[in-house]
Image (cartoon, rainbow, N blue to C red; front, side, top):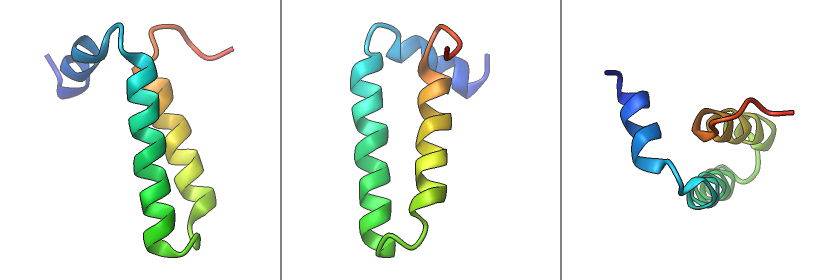
Length: 58
């Protein structure tokens, strides 16, 4: 079982909290870089959130 599969099992039912954590981490990265990489950070946040969802995005 891969690490991502283990994370998905642990977060099952707590997707909202995982989304908040991803947002908070992205905001911290933006703050530390002065917003220089905000586009890349936003894309990374979106990809991370997709990984924790059971359903594919619509």
